[in-house]
Image (tube, rainbow, N blue to C red; front, side):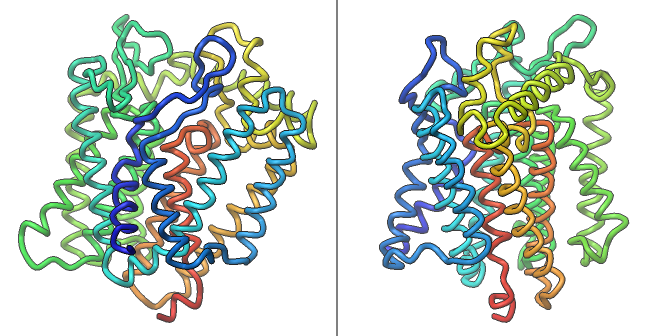
Length: 435
């Protein structure tokens, strides 16, 4: 039974970035992503995994500590916010999904150390990397074709230069479509591939290899995943890659780079990737990083922030109801593509659940990250130190990105990434450090 549970978890991890889903309900007439309910393929794997886990541990899936107490209060407060919701259906759906993520967090938190202890964590790492490589193949094909490649069965986004709302670069009057992979936006693609890059570094610097092929595969995967990040043209993720490189060079004592030759190989791949892609696409990259308001990105974000701030001031206690931000503002936007969540997860949480919900979420993040950092400082096990170091780095990148994007809170793949990372960090305790 436990073997089946692990296989289901592996499938969940592999299909994490896949958007294959079925529309259950769409509110408001014209279809809108944020006013709709879905059932995803990886919902099947997640629910089945958790069900088998609950049977294995005889229902004891919850450990009452300060992290879970704050998490439950946050969940209950959002439940309370339903009483002010305009659309109860959206609120109920969002609460169901959040509870599903909460149980996923509990599963990762309660089991990831066992995977690590039994040497199965390396398998999980390779599964995520393999899934990322699939995304790079699709992303590269999309970039070459400059449109979707017809993977409708996998819910590929219908991207093309002339489709409104599609993320594009505008260079000398020519629209260049950014790659989506099988995710709903290039920024989420970039974030998932960044996680893959981080896991490649873990393979390079933690796990010892006995033959040439096993030594070269993580490095080749690293180079390919970085290429996929460039196809996404996600500014923040590309800058995060650059930050990783800087840390490898100037912070050897707190980074992964304790093996000199491996450090040289990784830095060489970084430099090759940046220089080669930079030379080939120098015009597009220059435009992407110097034209801040390209595609109305900055002006739209400012507008969304202003709307969210007004909602918080008008509804400070319970907000407008969990999941109801887009429903509430749907008639106040000039264009249909503008009807989307505020690009700041903290403003979004506070506008939907009230100021208290925002404070509870910030407190939850503080508890998880601070405990993880204390564990990193105290542990004497080199491999564990490096593992949690890089996961904390990726998590901070995701959360910081939440200051100007919403995908880790509103899009299923982004949500799974966030709670996977938080679950791993939260699994670090002083008791486990002594094992």
